[in-house]
Image (cartoon, rainbow, N blue to C red; front, side, top):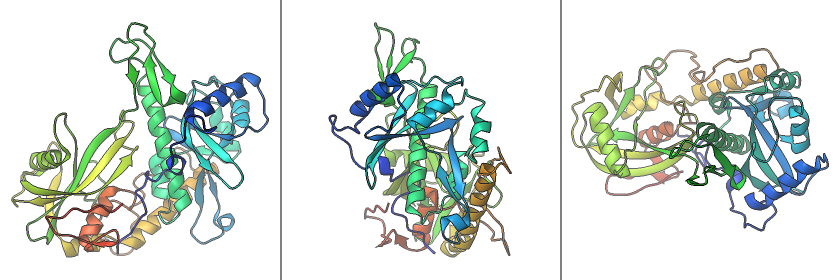
Length: 407
């Protein structure tokens, strides 16, 4: 079964669908001026446009959960982001270690809702330790973004939009935390343009610093007959999980060159034609990297003999189309999503806090399949499933010599 999405997880951010003009009241420039006025006035009255703030603690967004009955269905608990008004944010932070000012808030975007426009901001409250218990008393919790990713119902457009907003916010805040000093002269950096860039405070330097994005190629390597796909395992994977090859792009090489180099280095397979599939922002990658951009490809092998680089991979094997199809167990992914959503609900209610649930998508039921692949939240899933099912989004899968793009 193929799972078709309008966009990958973390893509399709509803607050960034349009770029406002500088004189629009919800543009970064205008909204920032309104923000400074509101902070100076100490008013708690609603603003126009309305401002909503999402707190983060150690990279985790504030989240709440609605029970199944309140959600109006039988899909299990549904998580939501813990947005608060600017006045509520001021009240929570009033006696904390976090100073609420225009430099502590980062502009995320805007969205036109039924009656008014809303501008969204994010703030890092990691230093305010007392907030954990305060929010917990209101049944909110700071939840790992990976956990929310697994708990998201990929058929729910609103939930997918919330996940994209949270991913964008986390990437910006993590970049701010990792770029406190200028890489050229070592002086402190200061936020500019409502937190969308930074500038060196040294008058002799004044370097402009922009948010970091690390491009990564991820590829499904396919044999000449288009009957088998090369899948690999890393030592950090949970048991039985196999996925695509992937690697960072090096300076001075094209995307296609990176695909061929990484495949040769990791598996000893020579690749000929490289065909683009889609791309996905990935703000839940390795520590210290605010956001990766996963660029997905099909790569057609010119050789078949595998020579695994044991420093990079635990194993790599050719898998038949039928075996890959068996690993795409829709019911298991859905059960995993509901299990993770229930655990987020428990965390918000104070039952289970601080757990790492990132591997819970692999919920085992019944007879175990010999292998499984990452869930629908990962681009690897869609690369593999589109090949296995002969479908790319709504288009029929195409052979080498053509180009295709799905999501």
